[in-house]
Length: 430
Image: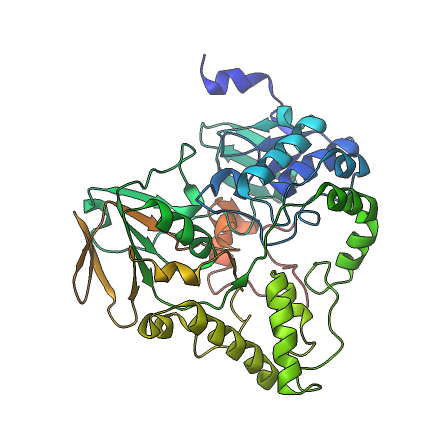
């Protein structure tokens, strides 16, 4: 019996269709059920988890504290789960989402291993027709896209990529069985958040690692640690108060934001405060040190200079340190990664940094990667090149709205809105 025949008993007309089984998709299925609405839910992966189902690269994890990177709608879920670390890793987050899905019996609502390939809105009938890769069609009054903003892996169109004879992996679509780097020559392309998490671990496993960097990154220590039983109990006890703090925080984190400006204190006190928060780790360093770091360029420069000096201290070779030091943009205007020994990794004898601004990539060849300077022999290439972010996961769904206009056509010049997130003429709005 085919998959399509097996699903023949499922409703072809429902109140709502949900796409995605990550944090948002699981919650939407739960809420729709509470509202008494009929639904179908689709997930292209083989199970729940969303981002955490796909991103299984070495070091993958959350950069938000575990006790706030979780659902808040159910005290039973909160009290029934115990986080082990300040910043949870991918495996623990996936276990948590499995726990939620099982506790609320959400899995039966989903068709797993099923990609949505199209969704067309019929104005006359006020209905969406959703199509899947196996040719199934489902009609619904509401289309809920819980596909996340970082779910469409972006692999650069480097000439010769198909000629490479070794392994190729993207951090956002990592093999579930893992990758064995033992004895291998590995190249990592990219130095964003995923790369900064993965590079220290890959370096410890591989015979040799070459990092191909286009843009140097500011990064601060994550300060990760195990949570003691006493701390776990306190967090469960105080979770409502913690979440109330997050609710009114500009970044949704439970930090005590400073009421002091960077120049309200002298340089010595400023360095002392930066160092104290550096030792704590996490985003509190940037958002809890001084109130004006994101709104005053001169204040921001004091924070950037502090991190630049930390890089100089961490990296023994001054020439390598210079390549790693960000210049030309304020700190935290790009996503600020959290790391665990990232800069120190470049002190290893088996790690080489290639500055692509000096020697750009020319092509991938059968045995490795060629820059304008030389060929780097490689057994494995890791693309830590991010995602077709925000709009990409939606445009790839093949959504057609009023008049048959695709979402990609509607957003050809980018999505545009004013003082909000709703697009009143968007084809996704009925």
